[in-house]
Every structure is written in structure tokens, then in C-alpha cells.
Image (cartoon, rainbow, N blue to C red; front, side, top):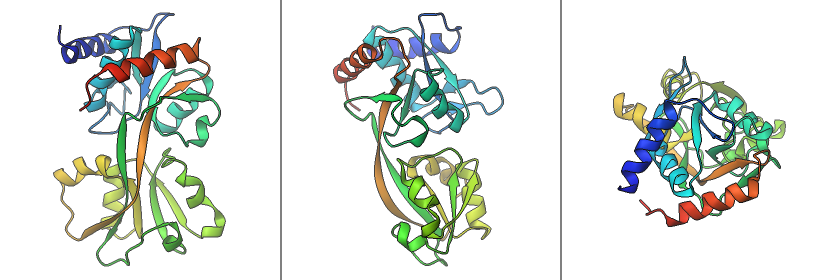
Length: 235
């Protein structure tokens, strides 16, 4: 059977079954188009990365179940071991020292600073001093959130729940800047274009498989996941 088809079948099976004692729990938050999580039931319903997850687990021969969570809770789950595996950044204070990371990133995301063309361009944290900044609730932005929240930088941080919400607040003039991943913003902009929206790329952020150290035989599980990923064809 073709690997893509096998991965799809296993992902579908994982969505429809309850976890057994032997199943690993893969967790995700809503991050369209990569992971689609229903915001009422928090069921993981699909997305571009969802099929990839199925392929990796299938290749590694590891049973799993997929679950959706609010962003911050998901990161805390990795620290506690309630969730075994996520796709995430290396520099996240919520699970610092509590996780293992894949040898290779599974994706590279573009972190952008968005603003209107009536606002002065900003090319880094230093340029945000004295300004208001929207951030997605629960995001660490690969550890950059620590610098942004440093009182010495004098940045007025406001947390918002979604990419679309951030763009709407920016358009209405309720903040100067909005920090978000281009890949997350793209679906909202495709549906509702924003004339006059500008952006500056802050960083390229690698995304890894992040495995809780509380997972039984965590190092062996990570080894199998790494080897499985290395055998899969690249995009």
C-alpha cells in the first residue's frame, strides 16, 4: 500500500478510536492549514500536518491517538506527560527541560511582524519600544516571547485568540503591530484581503517533533520516530 494512503488510513483510525494503555498521545492546537482543531469539542479533524503525523507513526510502528487542546494547555501537557508528542519549537518555556527533540525539523515557518502602511516599519524587538503588540495566546515564538515581555523593552503586549482576530484588531487601529507566522495568517488573508497590510520577516522558525520526557522509554521512542522520519520521502 502507498505510504501516503497508509498514513491517511492510520490518521483516520486514530481520530475515531479511544486511546489504549499502549497508545502514544499526539496533541495539536488549531493552526490552519496545518492542524484543524474544532474549537468547541477540541477534536483534531485534519490538516496538512495531520496526514504527515500518520505517516511518521506508521513508519515507526507506534500506535497512537490524536487529540486537540488549547495552545497553552498543550504545552503544559508535554511537560507533565499527559501528551506524549507534538510538533513545536525547541525554545518554549512551558516545557523547558521536560522534552526531547527530533534530530531534524519537520518544517520551517516564517515569523512575521505585521503592520499597516500608515505605521512606521519595525525590523526587530528594539523598534517596538513604546508600541503596542498583538501576540497569539500561548505562543512562545521560539522563545522570543520572553524578550517581548521584558519590562525593559517597554512593549505593550496584548494577547489574542486567533490569527483572524489579530488582523481585525490591526485593521481597526487597536494595536500598532501583530506578530504571527505567515503560514497561519495566509488562510485569513486569502479569505479577507487587507489592502495596506505590510510585514517584515523576523525569523525563520524550525518546527520539531517534541516528545515528553515523561513518555515511557522516551529516548527509544524518539529514536524510532527519528529513524521513521528519515526514511519518509521529503515534500
